[in-house]
Structure formats: structure tokens, C-alpha cells
View 1 (cartoon, rainbow, N blue to C red):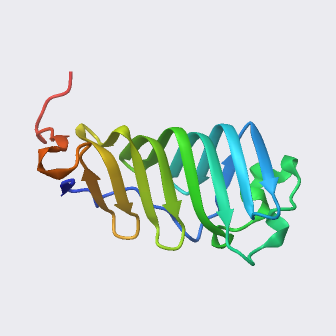
View 2 (cartoon, rainbow, N blue to C red):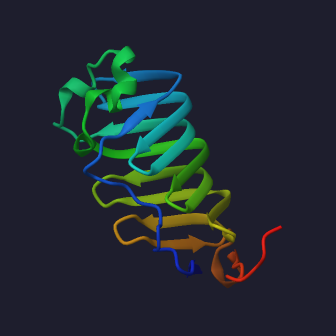
Length: 176
């Protein structure tokens, strides 16, 4: 059963649609006909206060969008999504140790997708962790609505036997 994490909205994971996206990686392969770009090796994506890291990422461009993006030179890719604006990206697929940090929240998983239109981030894996300060939630599927800051974490087992684990630190706890 899906369970919601407490107080996920304050300072939650979010993107800023009005800010540029910068992607850096060890290698990029542009697929003109498919309208995709595959980034591999130490992939880093930055937009505003949000940082995403992964071993690999596939960017799917909007069909009929900016065709110059697919024709950009590899040396120009780190300047920002192969020359395309965020509005030209349909969605991203990331894999291989995914890490997302925004404001005071961090989420990790094995793989994920991000839909640019709906601003929904989905992280999955054998252990998906969402943390905010000392508060930690663990499950196997995180769905984050970036527009609203709402996060839903699902257990690793289907049915009513599956459980989500959440540790909430008291506000007055002393730090060593």
C-alpha cells in the first residue's frame, strides 16, 4: 500500500521551469532520428537548486521540437542539454545509482524517470531513500509531484504485507 511521507512539501524536491538545465557527462551519443540523447559516465544535471546525478541518462526530446538539439556538436553539450531548452525535453530516464538533491531533501534509487510536462519524478529500486535532515523514509518506489512538493513512497512488497519504514527525528534532539 502506498504511504505518504510526513511533511514532504517544505523545501521539497522541485525544478524551476524558468531556469536553464545544464547536463555534463563523460560521453553523449545523439540519435537524430529517434530524437534522443544518451549521456553516460558521471552524469550531472543541474537546474537551479536541484542536482541530479546518475551513471547514465536518456533525454527524450519533444517530437517536432528543437531539431538543432539533436544536431549539436558533442563539445557543446555541457553548455546545456545539447543546445535545447527545457521546454524541448519531453522526459528523462536515469539509471545506475540515481541521486537527486533539492533544497533540504535528498532521494536515491536505482533508476528513475522525470516527466517535464507533468513534473513528476519516479524513483525505483531495491532500496529507495528519501531524507530531509535527520528524517529518513525507505521503500522501493518514490513518486514526487514537483509542482506541489507531495511525495508518495511505496513498499517493496505488494499487498498489505509490504511496509514503508520512516524514521522521524525529534525537533529538540541534540547533535553530537
